[in-house]
Image (cartoon, rainbow, N blue to C red; front, side):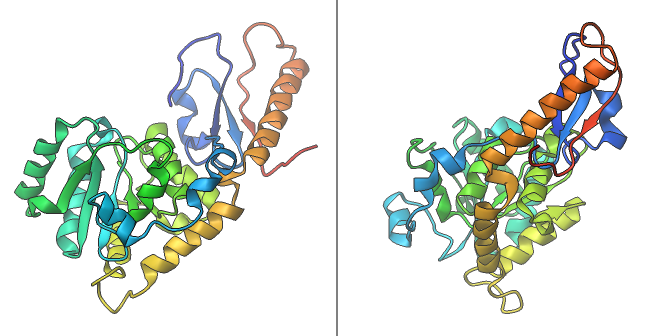
Length: 289
């Protein structure tokens, strides 16, 4: 998610969170066309509705040799591991050290990373068996299986995109930090659209704090925050069903309005053909004509 750097491309579809216009317009050769909610479109509500029916129990997890959020806090990230950098991993090991009742679930994506990650965890004072990696699960069951996790910890060097939407659809709170460019602000865009900006950190210290507060309220956690994780998961499920994040029809209507604005702007400025005027477009909460 960056500029194409091509003069023939007029617009980048985006939103105010992932590309704040007051900061990022100079980073794009295109003009920004900012949608009122997230720039990412998904069809989870249409194609994945069955994946959230029923439960994924402790017994279901045990059959797959997985821990379960009802028995321990399972921190998770399901990105390709090329998105994971040393700085983020150190934040994760800090959270693990602060919360002895937690483990970290990653994918063998690629599998060659497993040995290196376990070695790095031990070097940071975390027991090797608290970091576990699994193969990717078949498409038809992966969302159901991911419900065994407690929360999704975002990779700050390059945020979760589709895997982030998948995790939220599975009911997992997403803990992220708004970074310095478009690829590092996608999680913030999701949370804004979901209506759960309380999970959005402004600093690395706050990122650790938010994750730790949730972790301490899980199984075998402290009494002070008891129930916070369970309530947050319930809130994610509530917002998943009612917020704009997974409302594909709303996204399409807003996209259609934006296309109309692009054309009318070009027509009004006499730039239907040739180089467009340097005008950015912002659509603010409009749901149709």
